[in-house]
Image (tube, rainbow, N blue to C red; front, side, top):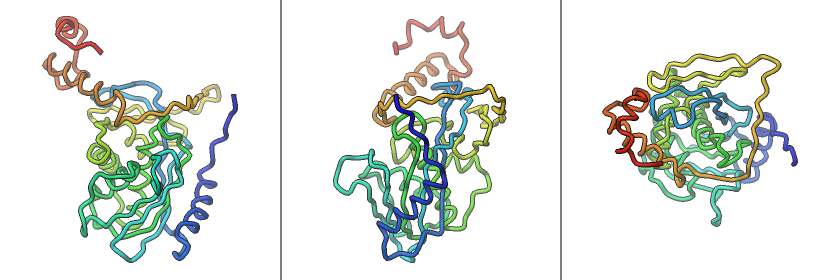
Length: 277
């Protein structure tokens, strides 16, 4: 088994400048940057969309969006990630800013995450040229999609000069973008930890109130091993949506707002009426 060293953020940014120069040779160097980390969840699977508690932590693996305004009404984006789609020119996308032409879901699929964030951003967008690079494994369960959304949002903040003060709102906009443009009814955890993550800490998040508590992980005997199985998945085409709908079905049957408020007693009383997983 080989161990691959994760590319540092600094090295990723340096490579980003080279990648930008290759794809936008007639454009000045990038002057704006957005970064979004991936995450690993320690406790609480499928509980965020049930209003439960989760304990994720942000990772040093990140997605970056690097570029500059281009004084036009067109956005041009190129990604260095080559695992998204197997169609010609799938690493490139070009679209008008929303005030000129509304944004819609389309191809390549990865661009929908970028367009979704831009469509949901609460400010007028300017045209730009940008590149995307990432050290987060794609489809590996480390929230590459959320890291792309947060990197895009942070880049748009930088390029418009309109910074969101309420960070929870930033996470919620990124979540909305995934709902609307990727068709994934995800909970808030992935975007929340990518925006709010604190170095050396996990976050205990109440996914109903969105209150959180930093949990220090600074003890020298704490070791977290993340293994890449190299089995890719996409939430938009996996059993994820079915699981959420089944949880909502169970909540309705139990007459509770979400499964957070269910009890074993009430669950056992209705067990014969709930569809099997």
